Length: 386
Image (cartoon, rainbow, N blue to C red; front, side, top):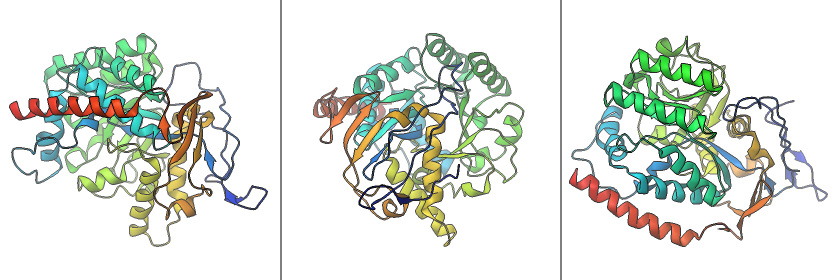
């Protein structure tokens, strides 16, 4: 089947709508279900399946308004050291919970029903993935969880992160094995993560060559990576990197961190879209991915970025059976590339209405935001004190 599918009139009045295929490949899910087909919702002009965010950091939801770093970062490594690594060390169980709740609400409000999350909280590792999964379930959003192991906090920290992945998967949680990045992990930790993933029948979720500091990642991961791995960013990978897995493109984040343009069309791998923690508005991610590609190649079509968005259903096929009814009547890539402020009216997940008239039905969104604001203030005080 051609993908992305051509957009042809499919409604009685000739309004354009794109068809949505059945997807059967699965990267994030319980083992033994690789061949399970998931039929898409019947397409109409204003409906799509639930959108998928193929890479998120839900813990970053409370970062907005955080104290400024001790000095202005001058490059990618300093952004990590002075911003994100300070934030993840300040997280505790309550901040993990309310960041996940807020992130899930915001995803639902943008028609995203499935999140592939990558988490790190080195001072609150144990049980953290269950906290995230439970928070998302309360909101009604599907989630795949992974803890990003790293040797930044010593070999014991890496072992504890690996143990959290193992515990969560062993207890039936939906997820992958997380790795922060090759440049912060020893070869022993990378081997252990790949081994655990193989044992549990899941993939590895890892940042790869996001910045120049990790440009050699392919050489360290090539003998480990398999088709069910998620390779996040890939900005500084060579064209012929030889890694198996799906590249996840995070256009807005890459621009924000000034790490460069990944130019995903150069890869033979499947490509999906993520947000890297900047919300979960996947239509916005599609638009920015298209605009960034267009800047590089004036002949680029939005159908390419649309195809990257659709790869999310290969990774999380259950979202295909979710139904989003939008405020816009022509949900096709050429129109959406130039139409902003398109949001969902109604969202159904697993046959249950979880958003109606633009508001979540299972939780009080105003209360979630109020509690998240309180928790953010507490988190920010810890950052100031630290």
